[in-house]
Structure formats: C-alpha cells, structure tokens
Image 1: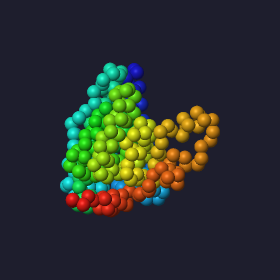
Image 2: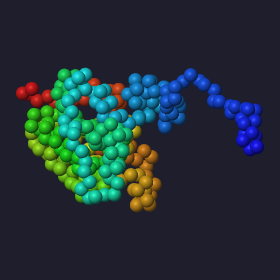
Image 3: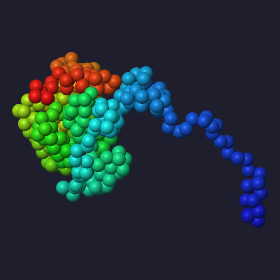
Length: 284
C-alpha cells in the first residue's frame, strides 16, 4: 500500500523550478575584492592580474610573472626538483606540502632561473604566496642562495620578487637560518660589484623582510603592497596605539625613504630592462 502511494506521488509531483540558464560558463567572471565589481577573467589576464577599474592587484603565480618579464623562450629554471622534508617531524607537515604541490603545481614557494629581459641576461627568483603563504623554509632559502651564487659565479645581476608571510614555523630554526644564509650569499654577490634588484609584492613580511627583501641595491615595490616585519594588528596590540593611515603599504614606505620606487606591473618589464642596461658591467 505504501509503495502504491509513493508511485502515485511521483506521478503527480511537480518538478522543482530550475535556475535560469544564462549561457555564461561558471567562473568566467570574478568579483574584485577591491571595488566589488565583476571582472571578465580574460580582461583580468590581459591586464596582468590587475583590476581594470580599481587597479587591485591579484597575486601572480611565478610562471605567470616570469612570462610577463622574460623574453620568450629564454627562461631556464634552476634547481626545480628540490623539495622540502620534515626535519622536526612536525605533525601533518608532509601532508600539507603534498596539498600545496597539487594546488599550485609547484614543488616549493619559489621558482628560480636564468632569463633575458630585452636581451639582457639575468637571474630571477619569484616567490609564491599561494604556497604556504610564501613562507621561507629551508628549500626556499637554499634555492635562493643557489640562485645568488649562480649569479655571482657567472657575473650576472639578480632580481628577486618577494611575497611571503615570513619564516616557516614547521621548520623552526632551519627556517630562521635561511635569513643569514641568503644575506651572506648576497654580500658575496655585492663584493663582486654585481647588481641586486629586490621587488616587493603583497605581502612581504617577517623574516623575508628582515633579510634578503630589504638588501637590494635598488628596492622596487608594486602599488599597495603590504611590507613590514610584524603585521599592523600585532604592532597596534603591542604599542597600544593607532597606526597611521596606510602604514606598511608601499606608498607609506616610499614616502619615508624605505624603498626607491613603486612600479606598476604594466611598466615592470620596461623598468627592469632599463635598470639592467644602466648597470651593465663594462666587460659585457
């Protein structure tokens, strides 16, 4: 009897209203966190990850950033197979690493390599905030140190794009050691009279700021980038004072002499090419 009732109910049931099809594939638009407007993904890509209306900057993957800078076909990656281990047996660290490798299609939070920018050979390092917030573990430090040493050996300039939440807590002292290691490598690079350009992107904080990020001969930044050691909220809670408007943003740092210039993404390749040309060594 119950089965008959169910069959009759199905026969006379009305279909649930279906959402109206718009013909727009899912994900073709993205909402800008800055102005809250919907942006056509193709327009965002063509504008190098910058909102056409308010100029909000989306994070760029290292591969996408390198593609906007390097001459086509000239980038050769260095040390691409180095991967992190778990020196302190931190719980679930290996699982997190695997998840981020799958998510970003990268083995670590930095990519390094050699490329040409308008025909001028240089070493490039690009950090990725998508991989564990760009935290600096032993592999990030090792890859950057090797890139700096390569630049020193072959008498090349080096450009590093920073994006990091700081030291990687899962590696403890092994992470903090990278501050000294990268800084020492840069000192040798500098002793050889070679150019180091640091480009600070959002965010650049913690141990990265306290080491190689602020050691550039020339320090550039993207508009609006958060740059500092501790975050504004931590500082306010510590000193019990309200911080100035825009504190730790690129514009504030430029006004106070902490960086040399703010450069838009659309002008970055041209700016770097001009700086490399101005600092060419005589023997080249």
